Image (cartoon, rainbow, N blue to C red; front, side):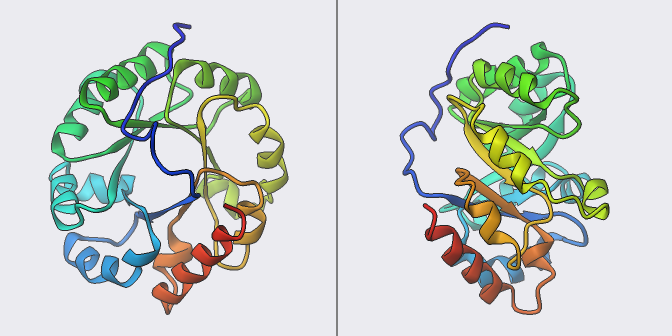
Length: 228
């Protein structure tokens, strides 16, 4: 593995724990413009989720960045091939952060990182499906990604698997990269995830399906602030 540490726009960022809102299923741009103002005061990053991007295309990124320039915009592309090209397209369309899967070839991840360095943007490596999690995290950590994301998939969530303890153990493996946690996080369980002290917490339906998303986002942020 070629080892390097990227100097991204996030390297000098403030150290408080960040909250990312994931917009995935059943979203369109019009709905987004009605929803984001409700939670804007409590979030740092707006995620254009994979299903949302598949329906709207990369033009969605430019719309989000134009409408909310004070927020970072993440494109959850889950890149699996052609790393540089796909990441570059997203960055040129307005993304501040792109995602790449940890299970792909190292060359693909390094291509994504190269694009991020070129445009002074950032990369989140999603650990979904990694078979030897600890070993792969060590490898990704050495590559210079901005974030490593421990992600409980939708399928795992159906099994009611409590992975917070495992996440806490894996946290100790990461030496250089910021830690993100995603999947099944809600107002009810936010405390145990915030206690791990990740750099970024990603919440989707735990906020978007709430009857009072503004109050839910505020509660989650308040709990997070207790551990920052």
